[in-house]
Image (cartoon, rainbow, N blue to C red):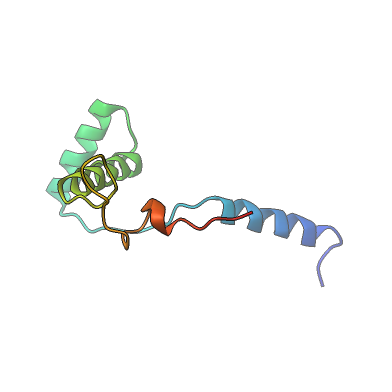
Length: 92
C-alpha cells in the first residue's frame, strides 16, 4: 500500500516521461573510434550523446534532401515517409 499523495507524484512523473519524446538507443564502437569521437566532442564542447544525435540528425536532413523524401518547391516528397506533412495527424 502506498502513501497518500504518491499516486499524484507518480502520475506527474509518468506525464513528464511521456512528454519527453526522445528514445534511447545504444551503439557499439571499437575503442579507437570511441576515443576519436570523445576527442572531437571535446573540441565541439558537446557531450558524446548530443554529438551523436547531431550527426544522425544532419545525416537524416542530407538524406531527405538528396532523395526528395520531404516536400520542396520541386518535389512532393514521399507521402509515406515519417514526418511528411501529409501524414501529420490533425487534432482539434
